[in-house]
Length: 307
Image 1 (cartoon, rainbow, N blue to C red):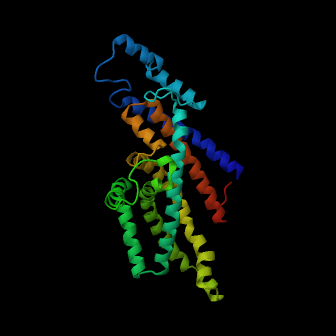
Image 2: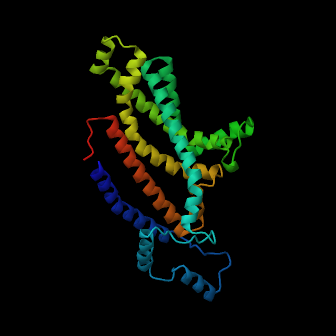
Image 3: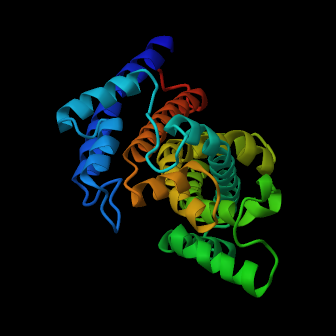
């Protein structure tokens, strides 16, 4: 197990290097610059500003210098958030992003597995058709469309929930962003669970368990559910990536002080270090979470060995 984890972490190094390289040069190729203004700066002041951030050096020198700083864990200063480094902004925004993302994943797994299991146990019934209709609707409507709809209905028309703001982390302020972020993943997980559960319920070992006289609830919970969850566990890796990328939009819509909002503001302001830092942090987070998913899969399926 230790060798497997070490190998995965070592293989992540070239992956991160490729991500850093692509993001670095794409940011530089984008039109505009971090210090563009409607009224241009005097040449001597502009030269001093560029020199202060090493932007006067050749592009290759900037790249090598940045990679060296990243290897030391330093993402550099933010161009727009004065007196703050990118590390400071990521540490400040990560708690909010972690809460929203983790709650959305938990909600997606709980509701997706429950709905998918209910549909599989009542295959071709009204419950099955209703669950699959809701799942297809959730898949078809992206969260950046669902979020304004939820805000309009629950926040504006019915005045049940606040439409924006963090409120110091109050639970009521988290409901809409968590639900909007979780709905597409609930739909995917429900479909995966239904298909996998139907296949498992027709397996020989399930017939054997029923032949022994076990109650149906025990057969489903103890025997069928563990096998049916394997595709869901495999999907948690892509689901995590979808939640991470989706949180960028959700945090902007609901004005949540998370990393995603900093990423959007950095992209709009051509804040190179801030965008680069959030991209690297998100990439590292996804790599680690995918490793955890692989280990969880091996724990659920004894046939899988992590050597």
